Amino acid sequence: MSGGAASVTRVKSATKQTRPGYRCTECGWTTAKWVGRCGECQVWGSVVEAGASTSGPRTTASPTRAPARPIADIDVNSTRAAPTGISELDRVLGGGIVPGAVVLLAGEPGVGKSTLLLAAASEVATSGRTVLYVTGEESAGQVRLRAERIDALAPRLLLAAETDLGSVLGHVEAAQPDLLVVDSVQTIASGEVDGAPGGVSQVREVAGALIAAAKERDMPVILVGHVTKDGTVAGPRTLEHLVDVVCQFEGDRHSRLRFVRAVKNRYGPTDEVGCFDLTETGIVGLADPSGLFLSHTGEPAPGTCLTVTLDGRRPLALEIQSLVVPSSLANPRRTTAGVESSRLAMILAVMHRHAGVRLHDHDVYVSTIGGAKVGEPAADLATAIATVSAKENQALPQGTLAIGEVGLAGDIRPVTGLGRRLNEAARLGFRRAVVPDRSDVTAPEGLEVLRAGHLAEAVELARNGLPAPKRSRSEPAPF
Image 1 (cartoon, rainbow, N blue to C red):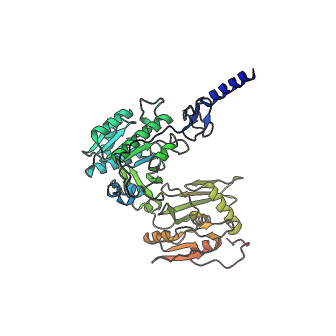
Image 2 (spheres, helix red, strand yellow):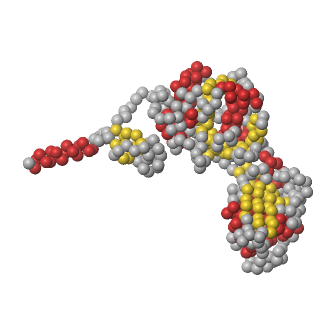
Image 3 (cartoon, rainbow, N blue to C red):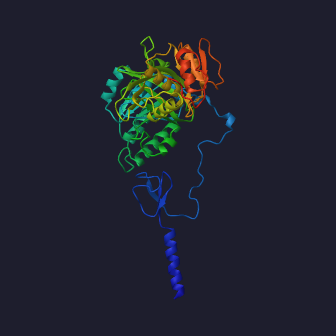
């Protein structure tokens, strides 16, 4: 009796060990039953059958296509980056597109992704290379109309409107292109995989097939990707891991300015930023975009202060404007455009405590010019000086700018890349710059550098070039 029970126990144990399970292809989470959503990473459609467990590895050695060679014997001339003809895009990509590289360009709807890539495809085709542009979102006639508008009609630019992955690969076989552009990866689907276009399994299959074709033919591929509500690339997270370059196309819908940033780049830096001007006749690279962020009224106006920010490694001069008006509300308004509201609230508190600027009964409005967004603390000092200038209705001397971070103790802290910022200011013709006093930087020719250690001192330097009288840190300034 006991022997029979032990036998039944062994049979049940063996059956339990060989029972197939399910595994998430995104994070590796396992479960005994199939579920539509991973319980670990919360991704839909990523749980697949893992199969029965085995006692050892199932993969065996297979013949290789080419023997391994010493690394010094590898030819690198064929893998040099080829320029696209658009200098700002080449700047972000690290000099151009490397043969066999797969680039993912993501951005919000209507930001100009298709316009930029159609212009780049035309430039590449004009240089004598064959480009295959596959559109899954529009008809061939719609793309032709855009190409006429931006003057992108090149003889070697081939256009195909397809949504089937097999047809896309067939076009690649027939055309043998030097560059493939797919707009977009979420609209292409494979008949061999279940799921709607844009789903996790479909995007993974499409991306895998296109990446395999790119590596096999040394053909660069540019994929257009959609984004979700929070700004991340739609589809599986593995898509960003599989491609070589991930770029974000950013821009305000109500502004002409557009930015291209490299989030991931295996062939170049990720701190470069490309600037573009989106017009009715196309998209144009801006080698010197600082003029878009500066007003051209001539005489300086109260409530304005200039600064130089760093976007990646690129210095950009911009103007911060402030408006201060009396308020009858119990809680005065604090409205910003292009400046973080929490940062403004902190600066106003420091001004109240350490500079004697009382704004508790005033509405404060702070904005930038040209739709620029300030995301670094180096613009704190310019925001504070512009607000003081607006409250006193006194304009700063022409050609004055301020660079520095405002601390909670009222001190002016050093910022990174101050030398590049000052060189850009000198190139644009600025005359005076208020900077932190602990900055070890040499003043460029033609630019007077005024060093300030405290907010009150910086305000006086920006106003008339003279420091404020020495006083205690706890004593507010008599403004």
